[in-house]
Image 1 (cartoon, rainbow, N blue to C red):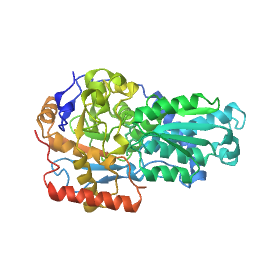
Image 2: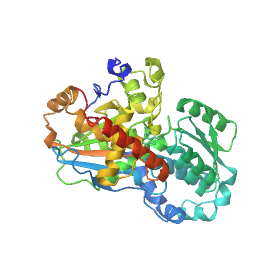
Image 3: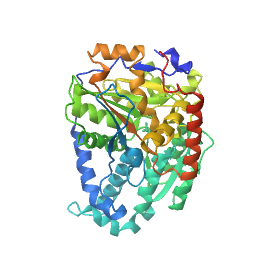
Image 4: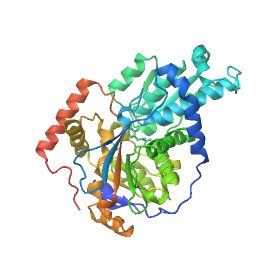
Length: 417
Ligand SMILES: Cc1ncc(COP(=O)(O)O)c(C=O)c1O
């Protein structure tokens, strides 16, 4: 069933009726991904001077005083690429490079992977293609070029100019489309099929991306305060575009923490692709334009009209719910984060901060009641998914816009019940 609030463009919290609190998930692919990430560390160290791709967990002051904690996972400052998409993107490029090098005998199974840094000429004849609203392209471009691949980034009309410029400055080719993200994916897939030495990083379908993201669950686990349990659980909220990054992390958290974690996604009111795919049961067979929405949002990383079918299926038993949020609230939150806590985020990255407000609305209260919880029992983690690399002039403009929203609408953070 499609909730009417979607086409009414009304921010609301959808609770997933298919969630299975006792779902049992296979941890083997996650554990393998974690071991692979560890094996990549010396190579990352040589390429970028930093081996571990993880971020800090920081308290967000005065935001949800009733809760046990309100914490921010600062992937906004993730090393090298400055966004959550590097968790999957780097993992996929490194996995592909290792596979090629082993297949061609450039590397022996017993060799230290960092030896690849001495053979960057080898990857010159191989290309990587990726379609992106921006941050995945940036991740694939930065890692692909550092290893010497030819990189083609197929970018939707929403992609920010500075991301294209940065990619070009590293020698990646940017292919621009006057259309949305789904079009860029289709064209990127086709372009890579023309070249036998090309590899397509498929944001809608890639398992490598998914398991690469899932490692973040181990990273978060190592940082959490003590005391998290079924009775005093963790509520994690992650901004969602096509679904891969939040999906991989949600899977990982659920597999590791079981009933002690509840995971929510956050999407823009004009582009709730995963919400629509999951609530209707149609997955990738429905897009936001089918219900009268534009798919356009200031949150460029979340400007996705059609969800990943794979993620919609995986999230059935896992996800607690999804809320939708306006662009204006994101702008105001971007300013709030900067002003009160000196945290630099892009608009997409601010979407995950509103769960405490949505828990005060009717569906939120009902969800808490059904789980015999009250707001005081909860440890919140909001995933701040990107922003560190936004150029200062653009960031200043965004901050001014956010401040203007707050001045005009001091009640912007309150969600109507
Ligand atoms: C900053 C930011 N947050 C969240 C997301 C959502 O990730 P996904 O599209 O995998 O759902 C993106 C995607 O590009 C992003 O750039």
